[in-house]
Amino acid sequence: MLAIEKLKPKGYFLAICAVSIGGFLNGYDTGSIGAITVMPQFLNTFGDLSPFMRGFSVSLLLLMGTAPSLFAGYLSDTYGRLSITGLGASIFLVGVVLEGAASKLPMFLVGRSLAGIGEGFWLGCVTVYAAEVAPATNRGLFMSIVQLNTTFGITLGYFTCYGTVRLPSSLSWRLPFIIQAILATALIIACYFLPSSPRWLVLHGRRDEALQAVERLGIDKREAEKDILNPTGVEHEQLERGYWHGLVMLFRKTYRKRTGLALLMLGGAQLSGIDGVLYYAPTLFEQAGLPEQTAGFLASGVSAILMMAITVPAVLLADKIPRRTSVISGGLILTACMFLMGILYASSSVHQGYGVARWVVVTSIFVFALTYCFTWAVVMKIYASEIQPAKTRASANSIAQGMGFFTNWVVAFTTPIFLASSRSGVYFFYGGLTLFNLAVMACYMPETKGVPLEEVHRAFNEPVFKGWNSLLRRRVVEPLSRPASRAGLRNSGERGEEIEMGSFAKATGSGGGLRVQVGGSV
View 1 (cartoon, rainbow, N blue to C red):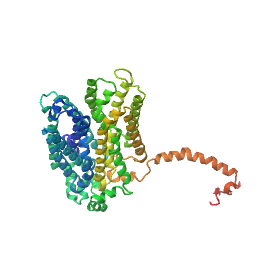
View 2: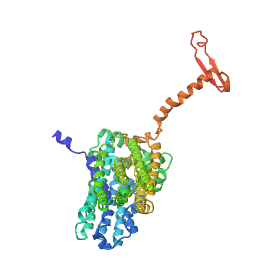
View 3: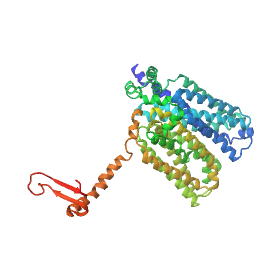
View 4: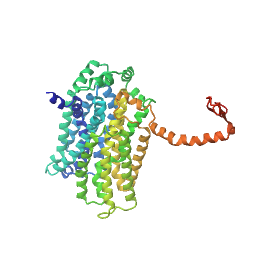
């Protein structure tokens, strides 16, 4: 019986798995919508789409998710993480039903809009919920389940369309939306039955309910007493002052650094160009000189499987590899891949049907996507959520998520335009943005691996390069100062220097010492 109890999964693990359906739905849409819009059956229903209209249809969900993301944090602080997640899932459900039932393009676009609004409400909330119920020692691992499900959704979205395209009727493109509707319903039901975040309950003074939630989630009692069940009065005050006060607070001196990092991570990181790779991989492979059928296979099949495979060890190692190490090493590889591809195209080294350069480009695309999945995709979401204090966590994360939606839309909408005008320019552009983001994070991002949420703020009170400063002082500053000191001893009185010898220096052997006066003061 005891052995069975040990094998029973913890409540917080099951809760995180349940809310990560939201991550799966986000990935499933990403993996399927591009293929859906080029299916013959889809085009028979809506007619041929121009490149502009196809890009608009694909990216509309991202654009519409921006605005609700800005308010989702305040709403989840007020009404609860699960309540707003359930609201978003309900709106998303209506959207995908309209998409799947559409017979005219305007109805399809209305459905895309509602689906985007729904995602905007829930996507930040599920990450915050996972951060608040996960144990500190394995927080990265459990928060990464959301990203793992996102990658799994991308993979299943690709292969669902690969299978349904063979159906002769419009069910070929409607079936992916039916699957999304079923999963959205499951997410709504999960939000109804799951326990609320105990941290959110404590924040609202509902300590007895928080204790019950801790019990249901299987959170360690000692950790709960130490880190969860001890709120501050300032946090209660923040909840009472409303949305705009909370928004202003995010950019006050105490919090602006953490807010800026969250915006950079969830917004600026998308400007690395990852969505351009995910949505338009077939075009990238085709420009590299591969035949169209081969390009489609590599983009929709192999890349999806590899991204899924690389995310599994990334999740398992989330609390083994320091956050800074993952971000910096990943950023260097991402930048190198983009610049390498840009140089190859700028030098006209990539040719259709022959040459080594085209395979270098193909390999670089794979390396870029896999590196992003292993490093930035996992760490950015974890870090952006865990660095915020309870009173600003949901708001800051939601605003950063909104920035992510908007920058994703920009990338998804403009990448085809960039590729049509300059094959090399798009890689240099995204490579430069990635390098800039990397430099900022390297300078301002402290390490938070294994630190309880209530103690993360202390990391921001210490200089990021504290160890480097100490090393620099020992290896450079102090050695350089020694010759200057010896020169001062030889040139007593120069530049206001005065060397005063004690009785020991007078060879009396009775103590004293050495005193140095510089500029007239001791």
